[in-house]
Length: 303
Image 1 (cartoon, rainbow, N blue to C red):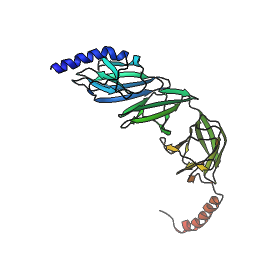
Image 2 (tube, rainbow, N blue to C red; image 1 turned 45 degrees about the horizontal axis):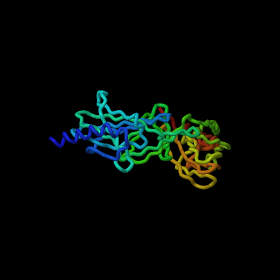
Image 3 (cartoon, rainbow, N blue to C red; image 1 turned 45 degrees about the vertical axis):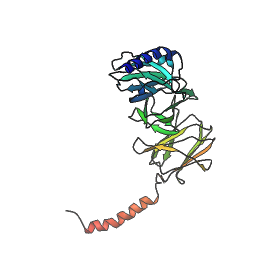
Image 4 (cartoon, helix red, strand yellow; image 1 turned 120 degrees about the vertical axis):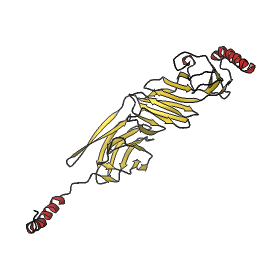
């Protein structure tokens, strides 16, 4: 009992010291983190929330890098503010320690320099050692996670299982270029999302390919189209050399392919299937079938 009183008194002393100094001290047991969320929008503000389970002892946990100290707030489930102490684990990781509580503790804070905007592209770099979720505002539907494209659809976020590093990028304003492909009586819209200028778009039915010129390097290029026009599996070339790409499909019978060319040049997307060419021999074949069928129908009739 005396030990518990001593620990609490020591912690209360630390509460008044640690917020104003980066003390290299970790105090308390391991926290039961029930929820870790990072909220992203099209701004430089990144919001973080931890929900910590009740504990009869002080608990300590690591925070995300780059916290704005003045933004840290700890409350219970009813929104009543609770005391806390900020510190360090000795490895440049900022920590927070919370007093014993019979209810959940909710920690909220903002990060600085985690989100930057450059040439119409937001880039967010975050890392944590435990599973966390990333939630996006309604204005963000398409984004890139470690250079792989993801479309949220009716979802509102992703989960980074077991923690790790995540580089998340998304456009501030969606730069869509629409190219129309006309083949026989069919029309197809091919959408290209990129901050790079696009020239010389071409669809070649014979070679089962789509090609176009990109004029800038290291810019995401995402092309969306009906699979009926050009179906996979695909090979994508930059100046005749194969490059990596990612793909996704949320809308039925549509495919999106994303790449990040490391230099300007010609992108060529080669498919496996292509919209069939209307053959001039089809009417002749149909006429021949009719000629053969008429005598048969005269000989046999349905009743």
